[in-house]
Image 1: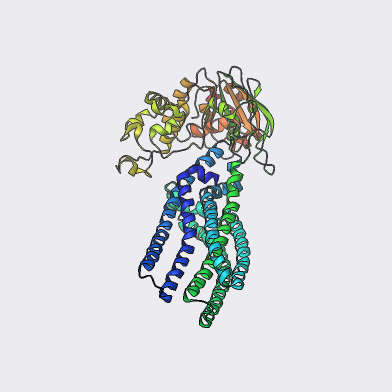
Image 2: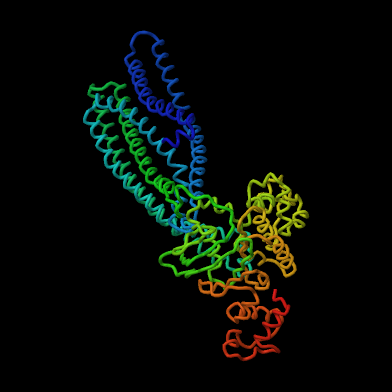
Length: 627
């Protein structure tokens, strides 16, 4: 209620006044109707004036009763919109302040976040509506119950007692509804996943090529039918329970009407008394029903609102010191010392006793097979996770002693799975440093460094071109305004985003040229080599020819750094690096092979072709680049 009041105080005030009016109006109408009927039936002297006054007063109350629901609807809608804004702001502020990725990778937390978004937007209004509904019902019920007690104390007691099972039934149904919403979370998430696949442009090519639309649609419909079936069972329970309660109420009302008719025939009640009795029974039952439903809505809203409370109270997934140390400018280097890491207690180790020194002012290259832990190491450097064991030191200080946000201000990165935002070119690049959004020269300089400036200049609106077809109407429906880039062009935009943050201490490049052709890759690495000179950088690449000039090349194998050194040193050791490099060189030189290089290396037999592995290594070292 406090949340609703802070979000929309004027709407809440209007709802309170409307609720008081709506609670008083039915009782006033019933009494005015009784007085009017009795005066007409008794034909009391006094002329038409008293009748007209009663009729006029009754009309005014009826008009107010007719207007109040519309005022309530308007105020409730206004309040709901304001509450939705506040709730989204608070929830996503809280989620964005979780410094790591652990919570977002937890499916139950994701389900709870979705329910929190729904409950946070709806529950404040429901609780406030429930409270006002209770107030309205109590006012109406009190007036009618007093009247009914005067006319028939027994009937008043019967009507009240009959409301007890209705209240108990509503509470039970609420618990089942909330439990069902939680149980259906995974199935609804899966159904949404299949729906997104079927409607996504990114997946349309493969879905059509491999003709799997029917398969995905069947999966989606299976989950949707499962959801519908569960909700149908719930609706059936509601129908059975509430139907039985409605029959009970109708039976009581019918019995009361028979008693009132008999009492009128015997002269114990007047015609006005009968109309008042009928209105009192109906009003009391209606008020009790409203009271029960108000309590029911409040109860269900409170149960659902627990998801909002839990998300808002979710503790940090990374420990953050109350008095973090300032992050100094990197002068010595970043060291991974005995780092072990796995994504969960039941998951395998990704990094095992990893030791690596990234020297300040130098380029360090990291190579290894797929799954060796390279991208995980990058996440640890960005402190998206903390090591399970060991430490990462920044000039000798454990990075856990820094504020994660301040640490990341000193980093810049191109991730292998970079993001393509449905925004303009300028906004896509400015995601690297949002303060540059109003500084076009900085954006253009970053685009130039990434080799994408010429591409942008050819776009319909330059840096203001929308890189999406999703929001073309935002730019006046101009069909040329929304542009789709190629994979390589997107990669350069992502690279420009990273290079925009030019005051960083560490630049991480995780496969920065994987989507480029040979000529574009050569040009990008030429630019990057010039840009990285004298800067601290970590370059990760499967194409070993792009890292051969790095002062330090580290080989990550099985979660450990197994080799370190310069390109020539690693080739002389004839280890993993030499084997991978030679294999790539042989692939580029076009040599045929009848057996894997590892087999040839173990048996010392020459590879099919004109050169042995050692000879291939020497020829590559002499100047035949593999990539």
